[in-house]
Image (cartoon, rainbow, N blue to C red; front, side):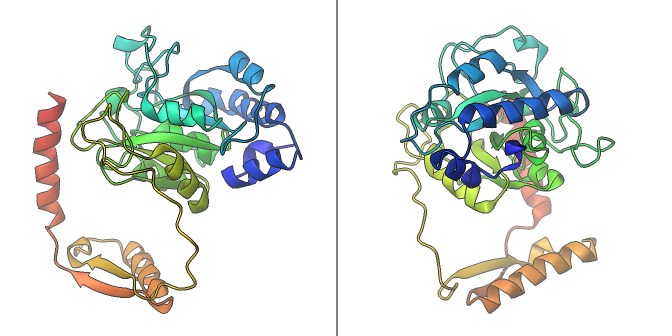
Amino acid sequence: MDLNKLTLLEAIKGLKEKKFSSTELVQDCLNQIEKLEPVLNAFVSVNKEKVLEKSKDIDFDKPLSGIPIAIKDNFCIKGIKTTASSNLLKNYTAQYNATVIEKLDNAGAIIIGKTNLDAWAHGSSTETSDFGPTKNPWNPKYLPGGSSGGSAAAVASDEVVTSIGSETAGSIRQPSAWCGVVGLKPTYGRVSRYGVIAMASSMDCPGCITKTVDDAVLLLSIISGHDPKDATSIPKNPWQIPAPLKDLKGLKIGLPKAYFPEGIKPSVKEAVLNAAETLKKLGAEIIELDVLDPKYAIAVYTVLQRSEVS
C-alpha cells in the first residue's frame, strides 16, 4: 500500500477515517526499513516486534495515535538502548525517558526505532558514528548531513512518517536541507532538553524533521512546553498552532546583509531573494539588517562549543 509515503497529517487523517490500520502503516514502514537499511544505515536499532504489538491496540483519541516515529539515538528511552552512536554506550540501556519521549508517548506515537548520528552529536555528516555513516537516500554516494543524519534520511526515504532530531548549530536544519525534507529548530528552551545526551547544553535544541511544514507545526505543538526538570526550559505552555493567515500584512522579516558575502553561490542568493520577494508580495515588510558578521559568530560558537564539550 506504500502507506509509509504518507505525510504526518495524511497518516493521521487516514487512521481516524479507518482507511487503514496502524499495524498496516507500521508494517509498511518496517518493510521500507528492511529494504533500504543495508544501503542507507539510517537506524541504529529498530523495535520490530514491540511496535507491531503496540500498533494492534490503539486509542484514536490522541493527536498522534498509531503514528510511527523515529528518534535520534541521543534521546533516552527507558528500557531501550541509547548509544549516541558511540561504542562507549553501545550496551547502555536508558533508565528513564526524555521529556520529549514522554510527550510523544502521551500523544499516542509509536517509536519505531533509534536513528544514527555523529557519535555524541559531534559532527555534521554522520561519518563519525561508530556504527558507520548514514548515506543520502537520493544518492548513496553522498552524505545526508548531520548530526541528525539518520533522522533526516529516514524521513526522506519514507522509512518513517516523521522523526525527531536535535541541534546545537545546524544538526537539524543542515541534514534536512541535504535530504530535501523540513527541519525545524525551535527557539532555545522551547522544547525540553531533559533526557537528551548533551553536546553543548547552552545551545542544544530538540526539534522535528518532517515531510511538510504543516507536519512540523503539529509536531512542535506536541513536544514543546515548560519542563520543571530542565532549568533552561522557557516557562510557557506548549506552542500553539496559529490560525491561518489571509496575508502577511504587518509581518516584518529581516534580511541580514552580512549573509550575502562575495563568495556566495549566485543560485543560492537568487533563491533567497526570490523567496523574500514572494513574502513581500504577500504583504510582509522586508527589512535589511546589519547583524554580527558570520565569521565572528562562527568564532564565538567554536570557543563556546569546544568549552562545553570538554
